[in-house]
View 1 (cartoon, rainbow, N blue to C red):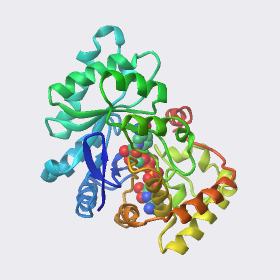
View 2: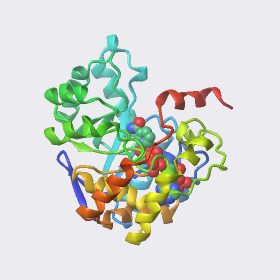
View 3: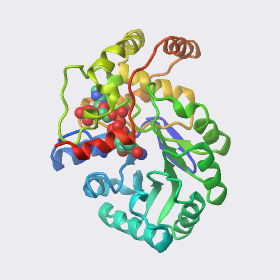
View 4: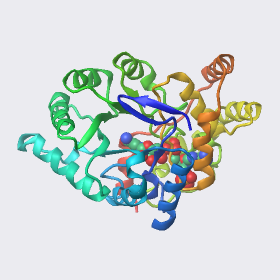
Length: 323
Ligand SMILES: NC(=O)c1ccc[n+]([C@@H]2O[C@H](COP(=O)([O-])OP(=O)(O)OC[C@H]3O[C@@H](n4cnc5c(N)ncnc54)[C@H](OP(=O)(O)O)[C@@H]3O)[C@@H](O)[C@H]2O)c1
């Protein structure tokens, strides 16, 4: 597996998002199978694993901790604290430290390589969080820090206080908002960019049908790119990806990941899957090299396509009001 550098961390060029094992995509496999899948991902060359305290209310961290225990010193482990329950008036450092300690306890480790702020709301000054993260780095509890769904302005302000290792924002062929400012800011400042939902929650694999129905906590119940009309309207995108995939002897998911790997050498996607053949396929995207001419042709074809639907936190919040 090829490696890439984000901040001072060396990681596999494609990582593994562990969220779906406990959260966000309906029922997952049982614990023994999930643990086995994560270890097989490592055997395939994956050294970058992503979780968060909110995934399954801590259950995902416990699962990831158990899976990675035998290989802990060989992987880069990332987790996140969510600021929604932080009281800024009540001692920020004490609260973030307590949240990190709880994550470390669930993960069964005394440090993580990367600790993200899961969302970056305006009411919580980024400089204050950055200062706490700097202390945690000094204490050796984290090796680096990041922000998720940050703006370029927030990144610049935070980085000036404590240099950032990585930004984890949504990015895929279907969600390119951050190309205009966040990715250039990361490039200018030497910060890694870690796209979440790099396969647009699986749409870009071409394996989801407009007739599929989703249950439980599956975000595809509420994110609008999976509304049947939008899925049908987005078929031209899958046609383009399928044609390129056939030309390259790859799959649409691999072309989607190879496309972003080609863009910048500090981009490291973290697709998530609960199936070995898909994990193998996604990690294999690191070996799908696009030539400059192929990349330009993909970009030109994508520029002709209108996209329908998106994925927003507001839509995902609607899941709480469904059965
Ligand atoms: N920072 C944040 O706010 C945030 C938000 C969302 C996610 N994340 C992180 O980013 C990671 C990735 O996000 P994501 O899970 O939404 O990414 P994703 O890979 O775009 O979507 C995952 C979905 O795609 C399917 N899938 C994956 N690879 C496939 C393939 N090769 N062929 C067919 N289907 C495939 C999975 O199904 P199966 O599992 O059934 O295979 C799952 O339903 C998460 O695990 C989490 O760690 C962070």
